[in-house]
Structures are given as C-alpha cells and as structure tokens.
Amino acid sequence: MKVSPLCLGCMMFGGRTEPEDSYAIIDHAIDSGINFLDTANVYSRGRSEEVTGEALKRNGKRSSIVLATKVHGVMSDEDPNMRGNSRRHIVEQCEASLRRLKTDHIDLYQIHRPDPAIPIDETLRALDDLVRSGKVLYIGTTTFAAWQVVESLWASRELGLNRFISEQPPYNLLDRRIERELLPMAQSYGLGTMPWSPLAGGLLTGKYEKGSPPPEGTRFGQENLPPMLARRYTEDALAVVQELKSLAEEVGCSLSQFALAWVMQRPGVVSPIIGPRTMEQLEDNLKALEVELTAEVLEKVDEIVPPGSMASPFYEANFGPHSFRL
Image (cartoon, rainbow, N blue to C red; front, side, top):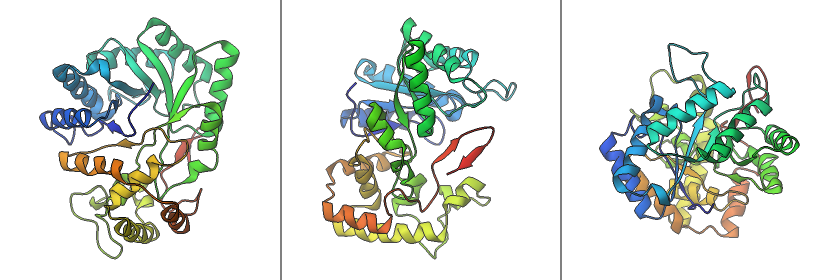
C-alpha cells in the first residue's frame, strides 16, 4: 500500500478535540494529501474510532483512505481482565472497532503492545482468521522490540500465517534508540515503520524552555505529573531542545516542523504519525512537508543527539512480566 509521508493520528478526536472540530481537521488533512489515518480502540474508550468513522462517512472518502486501528488495552472497567492479545479479545474487539468505524474492513489492524502472557502463535492465528475473513487486510505491531517482531515473522513462516507488515515505534530527536536494532531489522525484513510521538509528546514544539516552568494547560504542565512524563521532562532534555530550536531557526522553520522533517527523512521510516489537537497544529505540521534538511544540518543534529542515543525516554517495550525501560 502506498501511504502519504505523514499519517494523521486520531487520538485526540472525541476526547480533547470536539467532534465537529475533529471532522474539520480530518477533512483538511485529506484535502492536503494525507491518505493514512491511525487510531485505536482505547483512545477515549472508543470515541476516537466513532468520530473517525463518522468523519469518513460524512465526507465519503473511506475508499481512498488507509484506515488503521489497534487492539490490546482494557476497554471496560467492569472487566479489566479483558485485555491483551488473546484470540477472544482480538476477535471481540475487531468486531467492536468495525462498528465504531462504520466500515466493513480495517486496512491495518495493529497489536498495540506485546503480551508475554499470550503465545505469539495464538495472536497470529486470530489475526490470520480475520484477514482470511476479509475483515482485516494487513496486520502490524506497535512498540515491539526487534526480537519480538522477528519471533513473530518466524512463527508466521513456520505456521503459514499472514505476517506483520509494519511496526509503530516511538521515534524522535530526543530518543533515537530504535536506530540500534529495530530500524535495521525493519529494513532487512521489509516492514514499514510509522513512528509515534515524532514531536516527543510536545517537547519538540518549542513551547517548553530550560529554566522556565512548563506552560499551564500543557501535557508537562500538570500539577501532579505522571511518573512516565516526569522521566521525560528533564533539564538535560530541555537543554537538547534548546540547541535543536536554534538549529531550526537557522533552517528557517519552527522546531516542530524541523523535528517532523527529520523523522520523515530517516532511512526506513514510512510515515510519522502526527496527533494535532487543533487546526492550527495540523497546519503547522503540514508545513514540515516543505522542509529540506541538508547533509550539513543532519551532521549538526548528530552532534547534538548522537545516533542511537537518548535524551528523553520514549521507547519502552514489554519484554516479560514487567515493562522495562531500555
């Protein structure tokens, strides 16, 4: 499948972004050349899928869109054990996603996170059945370690099952660790990669500055910052952001446009996922398509954040009974 160089992430739609505003953002993105939309069943507990499906019904563009969603997380407080990558959960949630998205098939159905409690062959057999039924066209993974993807490819080959064709990892200027193994693996085995959080959860938008408190109402400006976000919001990370912002000014673009352009131009990357909350954010993101980074600029980036290194942790994979930071 041929997809646009940017993917529209729909996580905010139906949550922080009201439905009518969401419809307008989706329409504008499609009119601007984006043909790839990504959501998940857990985003606002199904509301994102509902709003995305309604938008495509209203504009009549479903047939020209590559529509992706995901399964793994808990969808009901009443039954928190109904989660993960078991056959039962996958089949049940696929039917629910199809209803919410108002479609008869999902173009790319992704496993949102690894699940060490479920054998990979059970997960693959359930997905294979969905592909053979026509309800799913392609399957992919999200935030898997390189070895977990390779294990799944081996199982698919051994058992004659449809294989994963994509991986969705976190990748941005503050966390380049997937360059060590994941990206080379994806290139070797022909998997497309669609990085999530190319703007590092907002750290690479220019709104946060070293020595100043985070603006009120922002993700990192919460009164009780969750541990995961606290690990990412450090003085060292802000120091790197400051250097990157100066480099973006030299190029003549905003920091967010610079960060998106950098990810888009990385070897092995197919389509970074943007997650605009407002129309203004979408328009700023789209301008990244016009940014060209020279070899000299890329060398300066490598001096600020060396290849394979990390200034703020985003790549966290589930390798066993617990989640470990790499």
